[in-house]
Amino acid sequence: MLRKLGSVAVTLFVLFTGTSFCTAQSFEEFVDQLNSTASELKSALVDSFLISSETFPLIEGSTTAIICWRGEANRVEIRGDMTSWDTLKTIELTRITDTDLWFVKQTFEPDARVEYKIVVDDTNWVLDPLNPNGSTSPSGTNSELIMPEYIPPHLIRERIGVEHGTIEEHSIHSETLASLVASRPELPDSIVERPYRVYLPVNYNPDGIPYPVLFVHDGFEYLEFANIDTVLDNLIDDGLIQPIVAVFVPPIMRTPEYADSSQDSLSFNHTYAEFFSEELGDRINRDFNVRTDPLGRAVLGPSYGGNISLVCGVFHPERFGHVAAQSPYAEPALLERLATGPKLNIDFYIDLGRYDIDILLKIVPEQLIPILKERGYNFEYLSFSEGHSWKAWRANVDRPLIQFFAVE
Image (cartoon, rainbow, N blue to C red):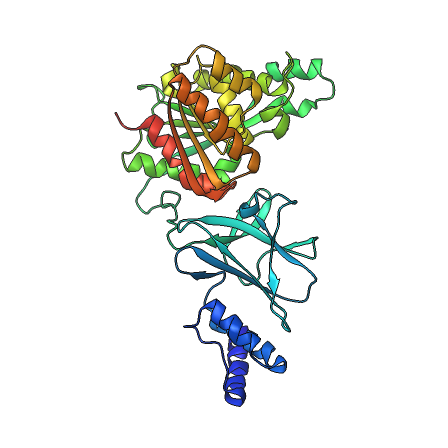
């Protein structure tokens, strides 16, 4: 309705002034036209521009994106993947004289996909009202800029004719974490009881040949925001991976469980890794028909979940022969063990966004990957034109699954 009403206003504007925005114009040509238009006519010309443009952000060529915002403000900025979501980094929009139209022009890779918000007057973080594309994660919804050569993932969608594995709900009372709570009274009792979910492939046989097994940190988020159960269904149906069992475990105190900075004997995340690798691992071995040898077991996680995945593999190599870490942090004790400890029979999958968090853009390519190279580890390291987001991890989660569990 708004566009219909707007089109009427634009038609009247054109009839009375003989001026309108032409869709064949470049944005720079439009700005020149706007600057040469009488002040009293500029608002209507902006209306014409906004209504005539089919999509926002505007894309020119394969690498240029123009983000626009209309409204009264003293300052308008972009914060997002392109600023590593750092509040000290800003991309300012420019206001066109005598209008309420603001814009910024940015260059991206042709296949980039980045998330962002518009920040008005330093404090009001809003979605881009001109951009219909959004991305939802546990932290909320962001606007999404998609460049022309970005290829959306296809394995995340349910397919007609593909049977679905089943997901079971379980929980475990951890004696390992109970002992930790007893020694550290500041920790809540709630960490001792841990829910988890188990994916069983189509035609799961509890008495046949044992299945490879994948253990997943941030497990419930991988199910909700990465559609990993659908990815597993499709990969198995396509014959790209073996049927596997997958175990999805959520954090309760995420940061200390996944990336405790203390390195003493009571380090929270190393105790959590013991629970995850040993205690939970034994429970899965008992209750499901899974392989118990390291080469039949993998662990996966993103961000801090990538750190704890690496910790589980490197400090419990008898439990995991495959480790996948998406946009991972890597703590000092982990890097030290990889660099100076015995070489382990583990293969790694690591990926990172080109618009990832600043500290990860230093740790992963400048520390973690050189260590893996120098020690002669088998690993795959990939970089994508995306940021630190669930959509980025979702788009690439099939890669470690194929690397670890390809049909032999």
